Length: 69
Image (cartoon, rainbow, N blue to C red; front, side):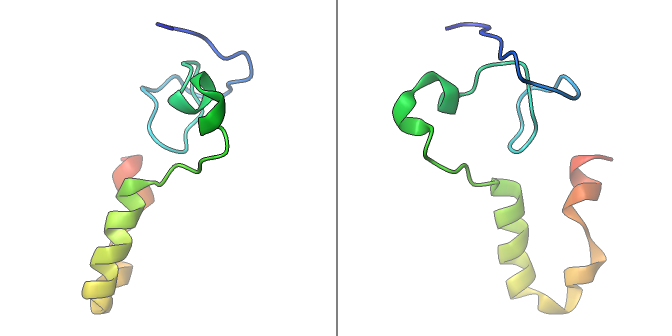
C-alpha cells in the first residue's frame, strides 16, 4: 500500500493535510468501509472551540492565514 497514487488528484503536492487534494492514497481510499466517513478538520474545530470561549476576539485571526502563510 506504500506510495499508491490517485489518478484524479489536482493541485499542489502536499503531505496530505485535511481538505487538500494529494497524489497519495488516503486511509479513506484504502478501506471501502471508510469511504462513507467524513473527516473532521481538527484545526478548524479547535479554533471554533476557542472562538466560542473568547467570542470577543473571533475576528482577530483566520484559519486560512495559519494554514497558508
